[in-house]
Length: 335
Ligand code: AHM
Ligand code: MG
Image (cartoon, rainbow, N blue to C red; front, side):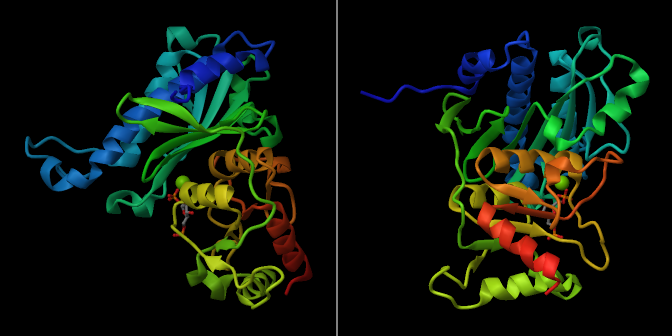
């Protein structure tokens, strides 16, 4: 007999009782994100047809403007969140300012969404895995004037967070604070199906992921940690393997399943690193922790950093807990 298939929609309904005070709004919001992800997935899959359909940013054979995929993804997610009616504003990597959702259905919406609609910009046009990252907060006050400050909640206040990876298969992975579950898109039925229930990350691994091209610009503690990763040591399985795709979601996802550490440290040019706290680091940090992993800026827990602005950057050390702890030790000792 075939195993029972659980779709994302069924799973969300089954888990609704995890939120005894919610009336199904968060479930509907997650479902809306799943629908937008499928639409974006369709376009991402067609990206290889640029010669036929027209290059992103240029025009197609009908002379129509072809949207860049990241712009397209942003519009799709914002439209899905807008028509769903549960979101009152969105903070997106693609928009300098907050995007208020002002529709009749969203008048009393309770949720705020932070999103990186299509992460891994350098990989979008070259058929390499990319992703979407999202983070959801509950509104604390009703006054419109407070919306910006409500987006600046610590990561510990997230009510749901997840990512979609557009890879060799497309997956959605999310948490609502009760573990992490992964769903693989079955294109033949157009549904995300539960494929990775209750994901747990190994406590240690043998992969380190960092842009070593920037090595010269790293602080001494990070350099010392990377040299340590490359040393030979049978007991800890070193030297570790270096794996770096340059798409945060893809690098994070692989390390989550196999064990490993992803690092985007501060550099001389970028003292706060590159990645954004609200829609890149916080959601992945919560997923990592929910899977038994760890996420830090080299010193402090990512989820406890109080954001000061929407597009704030922070250094990121994330993955298997023992590896992140070891990297922190090198950083604190300074080399
Ligand atoms: P993006 O939001 O412009 O795509 O930048 C984020 C990406 C991450 O996905 C990736 O891990 C990192 O930037 C790679 O940066 P670099 O090319 O500096 O190594
Ligand atoms: Mg990004």
